[in-house]
Length: 131
Image (cartoon, rainbow, N blue to C red):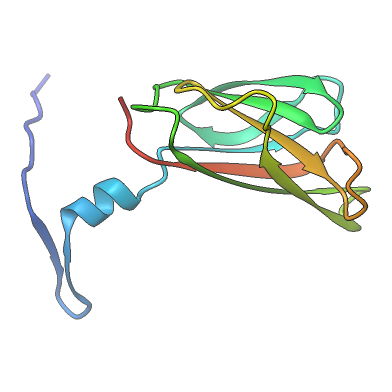
């Protein structure tokens, strides 16, 4: 089998769209993401990148486990979801009682009244540096 080498480049140039420094590609790309259904008894990932499993800790509280660790726990995580069959949006926030680690991001989902809700169609994206 042939071996594959390494391509090193500081800039990517498109024929009509201009140029971009590669550090924006490396630093700006999502390092992990998951789309999941948390409304079932065992939360299920529907699709993902760099994601190993989901733990359902309580109503509206999920731990998304990352396969390849982040370099530190100060990464940025964004999340959103819906509940009641998609008729209501919910909002997610970092779980303040259990701070994120380099291998897991913890999030709580609430409805507009502030009540914890399980989400059926949810997603989470992680940006930061891999270890």
